[in-house]
Image (cartoon, rainbow, N blue to C red; front, side, top):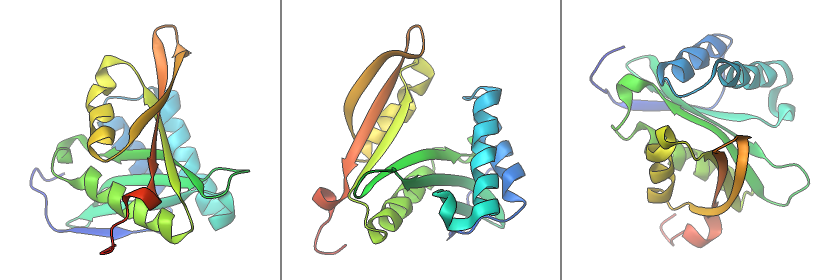
Length: 172
């Protein structure tokens, strides 16, 4: 992939080639275990097989015809207006250029358009995730809960939340 970032375009509908594209993106970060990569791919495959009834929605960011990042989100069952952001991943060669921020903003707008009020994100407390946690905090998310030793001993689950209604301004 190119080291320069061209104009970003966005699309919501996954294509059959996106399963492998997501695999590449998630692996490129060096952050995820192989089984986590497989889960990311499974969500794309589930969406392709079942459509919107899968409960998984996507936002893909493309630069110069190449997918450089994506977000996956969906409504949380048995809630009114609560959504999970399951994945937000930017290719390692395109990080720190605003792609993640643009994806998150677009995903939040789409969630709000669908009636979402609150977005929940969970991540690891491991040191390698410190930049991820800082990104969420800069994006207006607050750490709501920490579940000790959730993923493994010494690896807590940190749950972030953002109230979309509280963040809206008249211009939005």
